[in-house]
Length: 418
Image 1: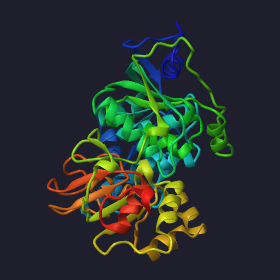
Image 2: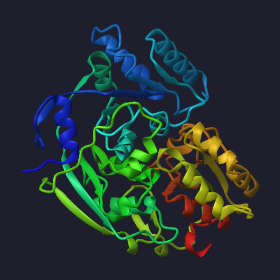
Image 3: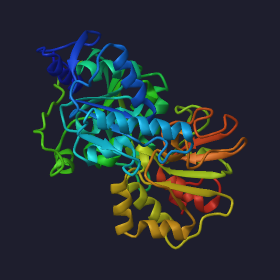
């Protein structure tokens, strides 16, 4: 019997020849990451375990991204504590409010590489599976144990294989593909499973697109999302990482709990409707849904190619006076490249508000909170009640192309008609 990528990575880090789904293993962690909202909680949990120092300050990264800059005294105090901990622990890497979203910053700065085991005190840590890593989000108490010991217990997950065949149509994007998959699997259909993305569509997909897919594995209950390392992966990582990639591939006779085949060429733009990520409809099914705010950004869709798609649609046009458009680059690196390419000017001229690189409006922390009764259209990953502000607001999820097209009309609009 063969083994999947996820099984092989966990076996390697547990010092075992092989592992099987359901087995409990204790594995060495290569990198531990915590953003502002969870870093102090995790550090205090470590202290409560009777440990005074993190196990390896070169393998622990704190980032300030969720509410950055701070919006009130409480947040400012939290940021101050994070800075003090990073300084006192002599952490080799600490990213302050000018860096961007943790899941974009880490690979940009060369912290993520194939074959590694990465944990983060943020649920969307699974994004890093796009680089052939086993990456998963953990709670603050578990992170406290990691900070103390550099190890963590794992139950080896079953693996669901997604085989995406064919190529996406014009103005249909990886976000549309993952929303379609979420509809098929359901919001809890992959609970504690590794979701392995394969097929022609994935092989032809950019790193950015793969990150979008892996990012939303958690929205189906997944433990992680993962893509096999190939030349596209290695090209992105070239001149970024110093570690030698440890490339794992699933065996041809690996066991999967489920195999789902998706015909990518038949997918049209998708929209996730309130208040569940798997409440997905073809955009052609939706009629005249008025929107108040559009958010383009987040660790799902705030990368350079997302801004390029947005700028292409908005160039020499003005957004509807019925909507406000918030654009938040996922990192300072993305922001600078967008400036160099003239994308930011196009967006500003179209009427967009450009926010500093951060999580922004994604989770309703700052930079665009929805009021009661308002409707938001977002390129982020969650749309449950209260996610982006008032629990009396409604949030729809879509691709950057759909978001940009809708900004022009004031209603949810198929980008293929613009």
